[in-house]
Length: 135
Image 1 (cartoon, rainbow, N blue to C red):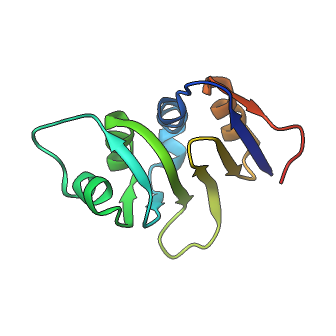
Image 2 (cartoon, rainbow, N blue to C red):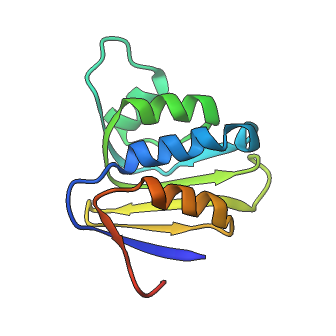
Image 3 (cartoon, helix red, strand yellow):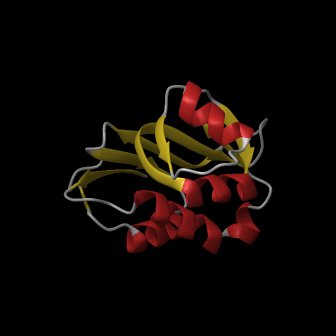
């Protein structure tokens, strides 16, 4: 299923994603999360940055992380204004569990066959409206 979310006001996208993944922590524990190169992510100021956080924020580098690290990163995010996050069962498994593309702070595209995760995400997402048409 592919869904488009138009941002109608300030959203809680990062918090909604964090809380959704935390809810499914047991099911997604062994997953790999890929953050695409060029993602524009703003983090809360901190003295001690993880190497991944520094690479994402300063260099807009790509990163593959496990779920616990991604949850920590999400907890530190202020805004993902442009980016692509893909969740897979493993680094060698091509099947995508959840794919999120944030486009220039105006909309997000989500692709997943897991209706339960999508519904949980939608229940938490504020400040966005689901498009009537799927892309």
